[in-house]
Image (cartoon, rainbow, N blue to C red; front, side, top):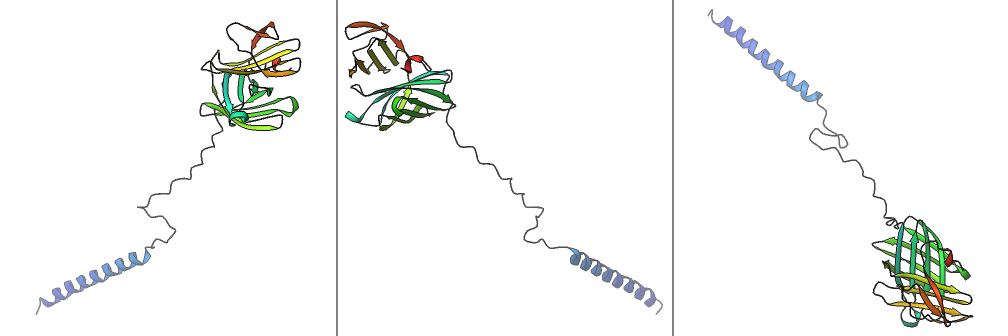
Length: 221
């Protein structure tokens, strides 16, 4: 009977230990806070910061010196030719239908855009993008959209003037050309031009021909 005392004591110690362990586990479980719908968890990745939208493409800046030749959107009798010359922030342009209609315009370059004006309310606006100059031009109450491509010399725009004789030409990269002459108030197709000669025959007289660049004063008359 003497062995019962120690066994009972040992059993009491084991039971007490089990009770303390159970209380400790219950306390830890009750103290843990379940994650709420809005709270981050250790395994969840943080959302990436919002990215600002890229700026809209405003076009490519127009080169400091360039020439552009092209045509309007019309067809047949409604079509016209257009050329724009740019140099050091200034631009000059010529529009003609190869028969009677013509207009000289000038203005400034702003980044990728040109805004030119001429006599009797003529206006040309254009934007350089995707390797070409496109926009709208209005002359004598008629409006067209146009598209012009970069063109190397001798392509470009030319003018000859002397007395009452005046003529303008647009020469394309393939060598074709169009123009209008005005002699004493009578307008008509311009004679053929040889860009290399530096002169043309107007009204029976040989007159010098000028290659028009951006900002040339010759455009103003």
